[in-house]
Image (cartoon, rainbow, N blue to C red; front, side, top):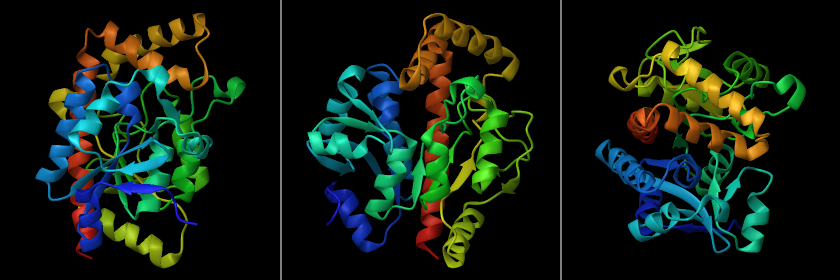
Length: 305
């Protein structure tokens, strides 16, 4: 039985010709940014990928199909979909959304699954999910981490989202055997900030090195993908000492309002946007664009091997 994949002509032709393709998630569009900034961001990211020699494949679920690549009309419709009308899809609910013909936006985990089904080896996102603060009592740990351990896709992100418990997130990834590669520096980035104070287990300084590591993992028969932690550009950074108190306030408000499960991250990102008077959104767009550029370079390097 084949997966219900629907390819845009641009993506279908690129894959058939062996040209580099970069997958993009859709949760950042429906749940991560407000309208119309979400559409502007999606268009900018797709163009950044094209400018760097690859083809963008934004992934979303609509009408019982996994759409791999979207034209501008479909992208605009998705960007205008209210968050409560788009399922936030991970491994657990991807099949249910498809079976019921619902609209769904793919998280990191679901995008990895769909990209692998489509034959796409590289995926650019903002930040991965991870271990939430207080997980020792809530057990709130993102499925993204387990997906990285089992699905062979190289994921380029600005680290894990800074609202998470970063030390525990990196510890879980180490336990799961996921290669965590800091790009161009020894410190792991912390989403809005370039440094987390946590030394990276691995460092690579070129797209070709990262592509070579992915190829070697395949030769060795190792399961899972790679996480490439790409620091936000210096000019877009919000220093840890500035964003830290804002994150703490947003977390306190979420706890007071008993925000839980999949609603936590969208709530926190919205509150941080409000508390920083929009600065966090500008930084978020900058880091996504930066990740798209690096992911394109990695995809090009993979296609040349």
